Length: 102
Image 1 (cartoon, rainbow, N blue to C red):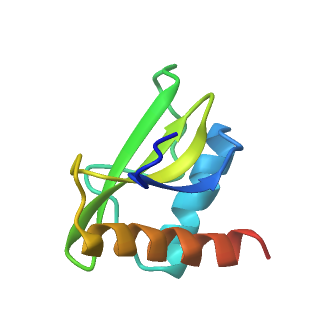
Image 2 (image 1 turned 135 degrees about the vertical axis):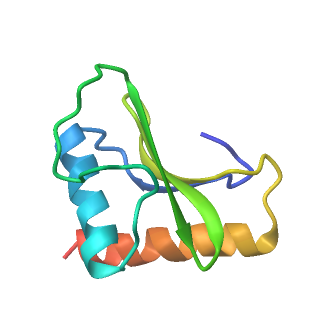
Image 3 (image 1 turned 120 degrees about the vertical axis):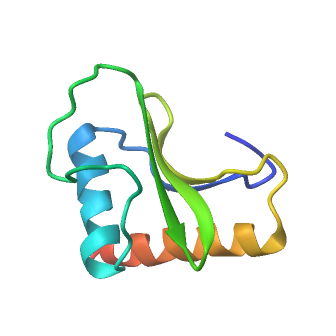
């Protein structure tokens, strides 16, 4: 975990089913479209421990990220994110959490 808030954590449950559930919330409830992801419902072909799905929100490029031992989070493309990037990723994570935790 990064102490500089490079990630906005959603959950430590890093199951693929949970990742798809969060992606569906983002897509259906928040209107977010993922870049180069053909079908949110599709099963994964690879067996890696990480997944990265890029998306834009308010013209900021962010990534929905699954890491097997860490969880699911929103990440920035920048290693030194601006205040706007930090606020935007936190906004997305907060909106997802509000729906996810109901």
